Image (cartoon, rainbow, N blue to C red; front, side, top):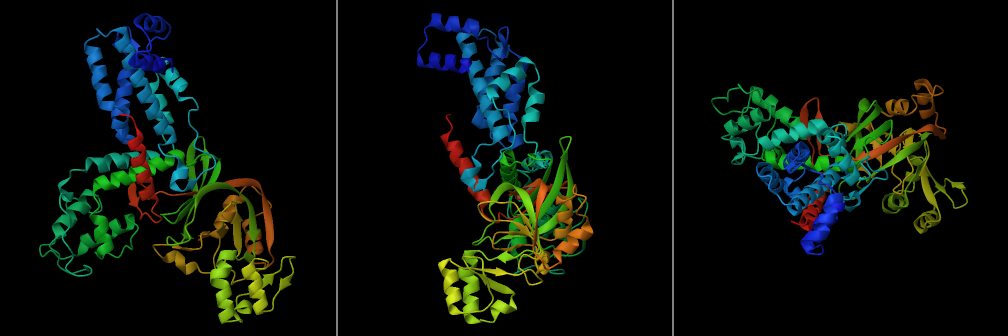
Length: 517
């Protein structure tokens, strides 16, 4: 901080030469050894030059000009004390900026519709942290520890580097030709087949030595490779080249690299390691993972499909909370908005819908009313009564509900409609999250409670009697958003379901515009 002040005062002309000299005697430069930049200074500028490897922008940290300045100072040590202070302060300021971005991210998550209560751990005092790392000559190792330590960060960095290297590949110098019809199926001819094969080979979905069919027909290994590509891009893997698949094929490696950089940015402020056990839902992937953190390593114990809120109007919010209760054979207390917009109109059209769906009214005093009358519906619309669905096979929550109290009234639950899990795109809910394997999730949550073996869990789920269990050991639930996931060395891309990637990209552009050159 003192270097910053000296440099600023010198630039503003506040300090005279003698005053500057006095201060210089009490604040030795951080990055100089005798009159030359130290080894740590060389490491620092290299870190800044390589900021793109972390999904950051080297120009935001004056990487090129600092590298040139340090190189000149190393070759010609005849810098005046004032010039040393200026270079030292500029490099310090750039490194502190870089370390802040690297550990905390560049954008406040609240600006991009993410409400995480517990931020990812980072160095509380970056200037002091930096001084200690430099003086102990461990800058490189310390920065590596400070970088994003999320479960998929390391393979995502590798994928980012690979896709950036493909930026000028000839396979993407021109788009694939338009399809001859609405879609291209097995046996049909396509003039763009050689270019298609080249792209699939570069992306490692097709073996490099696979020949292109001489008659340019979609067949054999090309179909299999197309299915691999579709699987990796959130598409139905049917081996048919339709418009959605063609659109994904025409996205350039540079655009994919930007998508990865957005995912790395989110990981910096998404609390993926805040607890020993966590349940994480990745919304665009439609997947839940339950894992434990042991000795700093992530051990995934459970993976399953989920159904999330509709992209159009009932999006699942992003936040983290502790799961504190499990409700077996739950009632479904229909939210007022759903009651007004959906349930009441159905009851007006068909009064028998109440009994058929095992529903009932609950008055303000808690009295249960099972009869149907127009006055009852008016009471619901006024907010004095509510509608609930009794436990049983028709209950919209299925037979178990995982509760982590939050302002949005979002929870995990089972569903009586498991067929929807077979869809590739699974945004069908009103915001809550339906889980494919509720028993497995309950076993994970209750694994340390010997009073709740699988047999008792299943019995409680099917009893028909609502029962709420308070967890002795709460489990953190994190609802996250990443459109890029690396699985077993393969990179998977998912559609920007809620437009959060677009929102984050815009926020980052706005942030960049505020930076002082």
